[in-house]
Length: 418
Image (cartoon, rainbow, N blue to C red; front, top):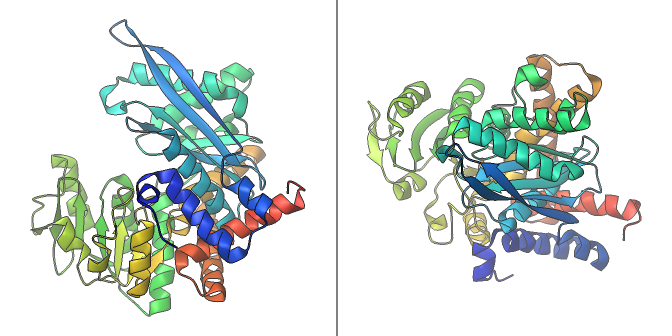
């Protein structure tokens, strides 16, 4: 299949393109295929917020419920200055397939608020968070739609939103949002669940390839990348040889100490210039001969222009959509195994689901229980994606998409929707 330029640049068209490829392989029923190409429902809202200087600013936001055949919709809420409805649609679509891939009784959703939280005070962020809940409250509920924090979402915002929802309902209702602080009925490991899940998947891939102490590089070293680096060293014995952020990269052939790099980043705002390292460009980092490359920063980081330079045995997608469809084909042809984002960064939604379950029972699990159940879920999903990939003779991303879409399509059929 030829991928158009718009499919490479528009996030929702790219998500639809991946659905199209899987639907063709699965020979999906035409009515089900048509249903799955668009969100079931979406809400666009405008929110007047009083700013600290006394002026009123109008913010725009979205909430998309892509498909709820398998259960209530679940998905992140982004505070981002460049958010668009197509980005939110794409995230909601991918969350639909992701929940199915890891076999959660959930559908997929996503939300966004167009703002720059770094330029707002705590008071302004609180007023915006509460205004958003007042606008979307009609869509929310633990049996309907459960948001969670996503990129740039201030941690405190989820607490404010849960409080606003509970105030509107007239009773304490923590299950409407996940990713809450522990004292507000949150779950153990929720802060690093995405990173933890990625490392579990890396461990499974390393075991399959016979790698005892894999070498890793991170393209992106924000909070999630940092957590994954620490966990990779702890759980797999990995040696991290290079990391990069938006300001530059650092390399050490003998291995970096992630604690040192993280401390340097906290002091300076960048990994650049970390003691005991040498600088490395982003293009040179991609071309390092290592076991695992972890794109942990942004969408479309690996494209047809640089995919051929990747020499890692495995690409573990900690970020959402870091590999374009064109690059996917190149990596597959070159024998690079991709652990697709549907699987690799599913730890967050799995622990969010665990948080929902705990809120429903009003009983908190200890950290050991959460860790054990996350590990079991992801290992089973990794095996299922591997089996589907081998059964269909496709690359791992198509295998994951086919698995997820097939599960959603089956539930749509059983419910009599098509």
